[in-house]
Length: 232
Image (tube, rainbow, N blue to C red; front, side):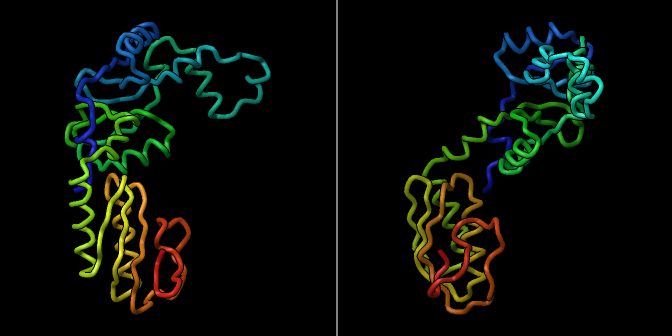
């Protein structure tokens, strides 16, 4: 089963309210050694996020030329730099996940939005239940070897009855055959999506090329053009 945020999240949460002062949030972050804190309302619903980058904007250079020519992004940074309370400093609305969010989805949100922390909220109430950090997602690659192998074998069984599997250091080696090239592409793509897989090496062959074209750019390695009846 794909790992979810529930598997790696931290249920101990350092949060602040929007009325907290700049000094209050700095003190909380230093005391608990965190790089970001969720901002919550009286019902513990997440309304924003304050990161160490937001706080460091206090050191922003305030030259007159910037005031005359700054764009929307620079204007937001300047507003935060002048902020005295959390409501003036925070980024809002906050990007959140639930406990059932797959780790790959959480990783994508962090990468796309250039953030390292995500508040975890209850899907029904919006109340905070924990926090997941970028460093927590690395735990997907620390799965027991038996669990990784079981998940890979489950995937392989759905696509091929003639496939030998060997896993070394998270690298999955596949050897065998399938009837159609599309089956092979689907097999390798799904193996790639198993949590903990580092790479896929395929010596698989197919009998019929029902794709007849190169796999689109950006596909996982191993799903590229056919060579001698193989997808490498």
